[in-house]
Amino acid sequence: MQQYNFYKSAELGSLVLKNRFIKAATFEGMYDDGIPNKKLVDFHSSMAKGGVGLTTISYASVSANGRTFKDQMYVNPESLVGLRRVVEAVHEVGGKISIQLTHCGYFSKNTRNGVPIAPSRVLNEYGMLSGLPFSKAMNESDLEETKKDFVWSAQQLKRIGFDTLELHLGHGYLLSQFLSPKTNKRKDQYGGSLENRARYPLEVFRAIKDAVGTNFPVLVKLNLEDGFKKGFSVEDCIEVCKKLESANCDGVVLSGGFTSKSPFFLLRGDVPLKGMVKNGSNWAEKLTMALFGPAIIKKYNYSSNFFLELAKRVRQQVKLPLVYLGGVDSRQGIEEIQKAGFDFVAIGRALIHDPNFLQKIENGEISKSGCTHCNQCIVEMDRGGVRCTL
Image 1 (cartoon, one colour):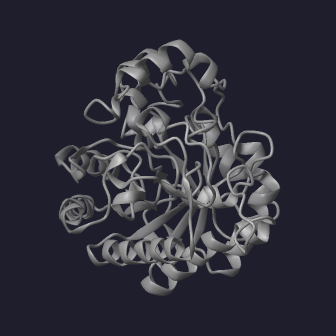
Image 2 (cartoon, one colour):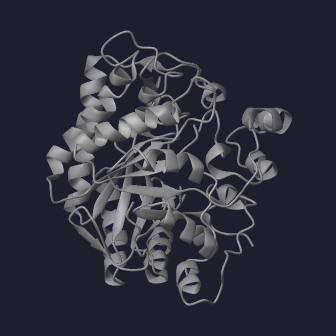
């Protein structure tokens, strides 16, 4: 199993990066009525200056009805103007930039677009108090239209200068909802077996790949597992990775968790409940979170490289480039990931805490991040933009 020096230049498909470190997509909340603002420009520029080979903008919805809430960004002529400014700022300081392409599926409280679409009709816990208790099962027209939205968005993002894209097949959003047997109850060719559940996500991937061309890398974010019984499993992950490899995927970012059911399976550490109560969009949400938050949101204890053992199982059986993500916070942790044979490493909170984290690790100034995994940065996403509160 090949081991790479993560600090040296690397190829991601046809793209050359200055190293193998990626700023993971973490929702920024730096938008004005869905339009990227200067905070987003400065945030990703600081990541590039701090030394990451690739920085990733989080959650670009492919359509207005793919937003989890009404003021979230989606790809349209107005947002593309703001996104181009972010791209130009990152390129100006010598960095490369990606963007996460996605659709929320049923996980929505966006009442502007009516009943949310999903693989099947399921309970929408997130939107229940906003008057959207159930999703609508997608018909053939919905499937085709949504695929076209993904393709058009990918083409536009390539046109304005993004270096690569990350197609989101994880975290319980639409394409993840197809993959998970918990949320996909279809009886047609898109439901039942893993072969069928993976069919639509793979169709979307191939359509994007055909549209952007072979010289434009496309990554996929994929769950190692959903984090609950009878969900998408690590065995499923291995098989989907093999299918993606056959479809000429340029790399898979291994993650985990289902935003509507196991949100802190991905994050680990403290649950900032007080801040989450304050951020509720209406009194019913605030009251529900205050009374039932501890029962609704399960806490997972934090440990460095918390997904590593699961990710190793995928690494042992899959040849395509894999990006490790999950609890990367130290020099020792990075070395463990290198030894395990991963091609790249993605980092979230350690870089939110300090965009210069990697430079300080490399020059020996520090050996571990000062992030305490308090997760207050999550609360700040809805208070003008993600930031470390320490």
